[in-house]
Length: 338
Ligand code: COA
Image (cartoon, rainbow, N blue to C red; front, side):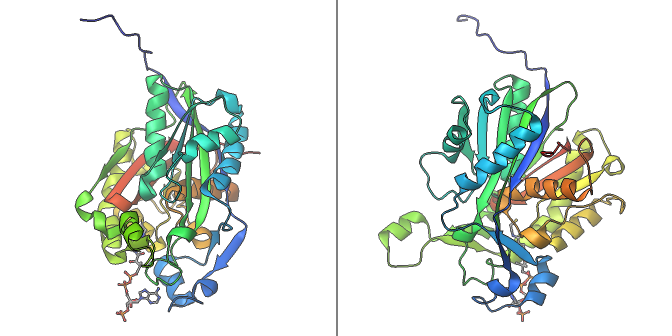
């Protein structure tokens, strides 16, 4: 036995202390999307629930969207940048692979050199990072963790691909996770099914593109029906597992904030969970589209802003997508910047 290593006791609880978002200015309608794909507004609305989405400006990067979202989250939490001990950026669309976006975001925020890393969890990225941040706070490795879900899907989807282009949008959402007396982030229910990993892929791979630079560039390709079936059949069980792990029932929920993948998927999941009809369900997809790792924090913000739920309410978060991976937890909703 070597020298005894000292570890923090790790008995604290964790909660989201504040929430902030960034929605890019440019609103892109279904009609604009349909200028380049063979589709129409009515088909997109009835199949997905989407009317509009936001696209970042070409030079407005994942980092540029993360910083204002994080600043608003810090303000809402009443936390100074130098108090942040770790920054996690959940994204699958930061096309610069080095350096990690999180380190640059941390610097721009004026933090004091916290731990900083990116997390590639697809559409499940935010809830996965939230679970990690909660464990980091409870385990004692950080007092305050900034969690950001951010995507620039407009540059990773092919403007001419009628199976993906109409679904996705850009944006960022951030929360500060910190130590609290009572648990504000419940146990996570998470997992993956890599046997279906080819349902959402980047194609071609970067190495293939480097070998053949005059060929097609990498874009996201999706087997939509396979993803729909998987989500509709499996995600209700995951959601119920998260509720059970938190020692609650669906009757205890004040709000349901599922990943904004498709309004029809949300309906099927809510029905399969037997969610009471009185529980408000986030429907940010109509004006925001599917923003992958940003969708759950953006949808939380929309519910709080519209008064469909309030800070302190008990909400179920559920995110799922590429991998095929998923993560869900019951949380206490955080305050927005006033
Ligand atoms: N516009 C108009 N028609 C389209 C279309 C489009 N963009 N894309 C497909 N169609 C047509 C097909 O050609 C087909 O026509 P047919 O019946 O004459 O052969 C019909 O619509 C049905 O195609 P299908 O691919 O089965 O559509 P769908 O009902 O599965 O809906 C999605 C497609 C993508 C909306 C749906 O599968 C979905 O939302 N999947 C989940 C995607 C998702 O959430 N991904 C994010 C990861 S979390």
